[in-house]
Amino acid sequence: MTNSCRGRRCAKWILAVLFFPLSLLGEPLPLKRAVELALAHATGVAIAAADVQQASAGYREMRDAYIPQFTVGAGLGPPSYGFPLTLAGQPPSLFNLNMQSALLNFGMRDYLQAARADITVASLKSKDTRDQLIQDTVLSYAELNKWEQRLARLQDTAVETDKMQAAVADRVKEGVDSELDGTRARLSVARVRLRIAEAQGAADVLREHLSKLTGLRAVDIQTEPDTLPDFPPAPPDASIPAQAAESSPAAKAAVEHARAQYFRAEAEHRALWPTFDLAGQYALLSTFNNFQDYYIPEKECSTSLGTFLCPNGGFRQNNVTIGISIRLPLFNASQRARAQAADADALKASKQAVAARNQASEETLRLERTVAQMQAARDVAELEYEIAQKNLAAVPARMDAGTATLHDLDDARTRASERFIALQDVTFELQRAQLGLLRSTGDLEKWALRAP
Image 1 (tube, rainbow, N blue to C red):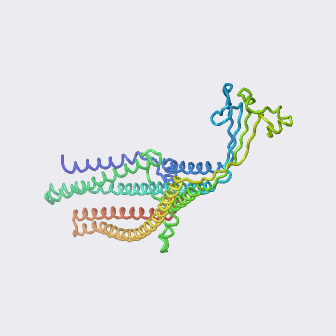
Image 2: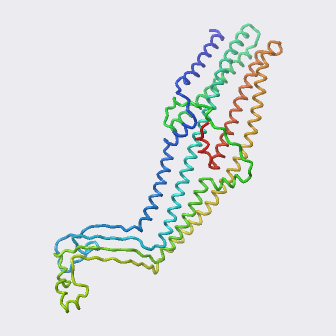
Image 3: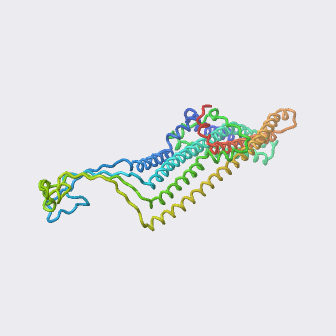
């Protein structure tokens, strides 16, 4: 079998590898649709939403302590032997109704403020989780688009390099080129195959990742480059890092957490203050528990002597009590220790909030500088690619004039391919930095869900 035949067979094999996976792909998936599916399908967003619901329920639980709570029950049992003792703290009764609610609790008010702050913290963390998911989805989408475009470019390169190898093989057979030239031609084909394998593998991994994010099948995911919105220009205002520290969900969550810890510390200190609760009870007492043997019956209290002996009217089956329960802590060393521990937690949270704000500001400044650097690098890569393309276009004319050879064409094609890959890599790194900057300023979700 000749080298030319092997070259044509390799070209067919490469084309089959390239076009077969693409033929399985479904309709192009717009970026906005991918982000919407990811937000609806991701477990992290659902977990964050559950945290918000849990924080809201915790606040309502403490707030409802001011709403009277009613319980009904009974203390049934056999007739008492001797004095009718209580059952589980209640006198033996056929039916009882208890009511209790907080009336004035200074510590409870601070706990309510802390619970409100916890709701804000959970909401901000949910926002940060959404932004993280959107950033992951957009980055994966943009990177997959890069590899798909590279695969399309490598398809043409594979055909050309295979033709080149076949032509060089014929020239080697005719004695025009040396065996070293033939080896170089085969090396060019091997390099293209390596890049094809690299691009195909990266694209498959990214499709699988997007499949897990969106819930779609990996074979149904194909990017649509035109749906990627244009990135807004970087603002020249030097106060952007400070503004990002104010708008960053992570930094704001740290500030709200510090606020919640401060209220909890205040609540622990005010736990040593007096508390007032409203309480009431109704009980229908039984007549077979010897109450009448130890209390003067109501009918005997009707006499003047009975009125003197039982001013409250004597024993009754129906009894009602309502009043205010007052508790005044006199000495509680363990509560003081808990208050001091809460003060330490509040101080720690405040320092963490300052660190989070500083980190957000520094990260935004770094991203700003990275965007400026990558924009300059992209301009250089575009010019280098333009020069490589012009050199490649000029080689056929030089070959016709006899000033260039087939190997010059191969070298020019290789340099153009390398410059194209470099331009793609720089563009993707610029997109990564721009996405990070959008997330720092809190504009990522609005940008990602904007129709192109």
